[in-house]
Each structure stands twice: as structure tokens, then as C-alpha cells.
Amino acid sequence: MTIIVTGGAGFIGSNFVYHMLAVHPDHKIVCLDKLTYAGNLSTLEKAVKNPRFRFVKADICDRRAVFELFEEEKPDIVVNFAAESHVDRSIDDPSVFLQTNIIGTATLMDACREYGVSRFHQVSTDEVYGDLPLDRPDLFFTESTPLHTSSPYSSSKASADLLALAYHRTYGLPVTISRCSNNYGPYHFPEKLIPLMIVNALNDKPLPVYGDGKNVRDWLYVEDHCKAIDLIIHRGRAGEVYNVGGHNEMANIDIVKLICKILGKPESLITFVGDRKGHDRRYAIDPSKIHSELGWLPETKFSDGIVKTVEWYLENRKWWETIISGEYRDYYKKMYGDR
Ligand code: NAD
Ligand code: TYD
Image (cartoon, rainbow, N blue to C red):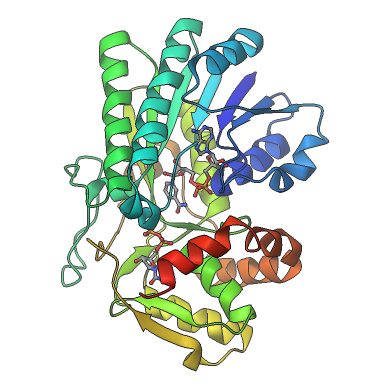
């Protein structure tokens, strides 16, 4: 079986590549990635040595390149991780989000129709549901919660979801969608909350918490997300959406304090900065559908996963030091300079 994994040089995509190579010895994995600022070939260093792995540098919006790859590989399954994924960047400039997240997804699905894949899986996000109030801990996102997006990022992801469902209904394309909560773990780009706080704390730099720090996210260890997608692409029902989350809600400020504690750094590094525009208050997933239909449950407790993650950043300094020495510097100055 051949699986095309787009965006496999990014955070979740690379973890998925490693997961699939490890647990499916009969699968060939072809990674298609544009290598934007968020994609790193060094992340896939160990996969590149595997004869069942192929890397192709291309843009999912490039119709010719995408169709050529499908012609060569005749994939059975396509899993689309490729996306612009950072909310703050989407607020700064939405255009590339619309291009990659919407047009890119449509281009991939056109190739899937042409070459008759048995499954196109769209990796989506709980952010398509908008947010929940902090004072209603009884409310959760289910698959039938209306889409109600807040940022250009989440709007572009919701658009892609709607297109995927339309391709299923109109053309009969065997599509599945997963909507996952916030992931954390190895190879997470240090513009996102958890890796940014680890990297800044290690460098004794301020830890910039947006607003009052009380916004809540529902954190899932990346390996658990990969296992959920693996189950959905092999056993999920076409045309269905599956919510993925670990019932692990935490306020941002508590995460940052925990990281300080694990690293033995003072909480005085914490600096409250201007809030994100349109900042979603709370995300919380109800994962009962994927549990009852496919038997999925998260396996890594947050208390273990966060320690493993901090250890990974301690052991892989070269990976993130290279990243924060490049374009990231200008990004950091622009986003946090006078916040
Ligand atoms: P990431 O930003 O770390 O990686 C994105 C990857 O896509 C990079 O390798 C990049 O080079 C590649 N890419 C970007 N534009 C491309 C294009 N036009 N053509 C080909 N490749 C391109 O993202 P991530 O955090 O790994 O997220 C992966 C997917 O999961 C995204 O679709 C995101 O919306 C979704 N998601 C992420 C989270 C999270 O917590 N990170 C949670 C739920 C869903
Ligand atoms: P992020 O990792 O960008 O994920 P998302 O916005 O997709 O949930 O942010 C997680 C939370 O952390 C979010 O509420 C914004 C907040 N945050 C900060 O307080 N400071 C930061 O420097 C960053 C990047 C995020």
C-alpha cells in the first residue's frame, strides 16, 4: 500500500511518517512537502534512510507537480497535513492560508478523483468550531457542533473541511476528516505555545503570555493523534468527521508555570503581553465518536507527555537552535517586539 503524506516535514506530519513506518512494514510512505519555514528536512533525517520512504519537495497548490506525483506513485491513500498552521501568522497575513489550506486541499482532492484513491484524509482542527465560554465546563465540541470560526487560519481550515465533504457528496470521493485539539511533542515548531516557552526558558528569555493567560486548550500528545489518524484511514467510514482530543484542558498560564517547574526556571520569566486579536477562550473536544466506533483512547497522560517533550528539547538542541537562528528571528521581533 502506498500512502502520500503531505506536510510530512512539519510537526504532526513527521511524527505520523515515523509512526506509519514503524507500525506498517507493508506500507510505502511518500512525503510531499514544500519545505516552508515550518518544514525541515532534518526532521525526516531518520526516515530518509528507510527504503520504504520517499521525499518529494513540492507545493500542494502546484497542480502539475501533484498530478505527476500521483501518476508515478498511484497512491492508495492520501493524508493531508500540509497547511499554514499558526493563528498569529494568519492574523498578520491571511493570503497564504487561503492559498495553501483551501486551494491546496482542492488540488489534492482533484488528483485523488483522477487517480481513484481509496481514501483522502483531511487533517483538520477543533478550531473550526470556534470557542466555548470559560464558565460552562459542561460544554464540549461534538462532530455536529456548528462551524463558527474566529481567525483567518480556522476559517481556511473550515473551508477545506466543507470542500472535502462536498467532494464526498458530489463526486463520491471517499473522504474522512479528523478535528483534533492542540498537539504537543517532538519536532513542534517553536512559534507555538509549548515549544516557545521551553526554548525561551532554556535561554532565560521572557515567557510571553497573551492577555490574562486564562485561555484554555485541550492538549493531546502527538503520538496519540497519529494513532487516531492511522485508525481512521484504515477503519473509519467515508464521509465522516471524527473529533480527536484527550479531555486534558489546561489554562495557558498553568502550562507555562509547569514548564518553569520542570526546567527549574523562575516564574519571574513570565511576562504578560498584549492579547491575540479574536483570541478563542476555550477549546474542549468530546471524543466519544472515535472511541465508540474505532476504540481510540489517548494513551499518554499530560504529566508524562510534557516531561518527555521537555526532555526531547533538551536532547535535540541542534534541531531548534538551527530553526531559531534563521527567519524565526525576524518573525519573533515582528510579533513580540512591541506587543
Ligand atoms: P506545521 O506548520 O508544523 O507543518 C506544516 C507542514 O506543511 C510543513 O512541513 C510545511 O513545509 C508544509 N507545507 C506548508 N504549506 C505547504 C504547501 N503549500 N505545499 C506543501 N507543503 C506545505 O503544522 P502542524 O502543526 O504539523 O499541523 C499539521 C496539520 O494538522 C495542519 O493541517 C493543522 O491545521 C492540523 N492541526 C494541527 C494541530 C496542532 O496542534 N499543531 C492541531 C489540530 C490540527
Ligand atoms: P498556539 O500554540 O499558537 O495554538 P492555538 O492558538 O492554535 O491554540 O497557542 C496556544 C495558546 O497559547 C493560545 O491561547 C495562545 C497562547 N499563546 C501565548 O499566550 N503566548 C504565546 O507566545 C503563544 C505562541 C501562544
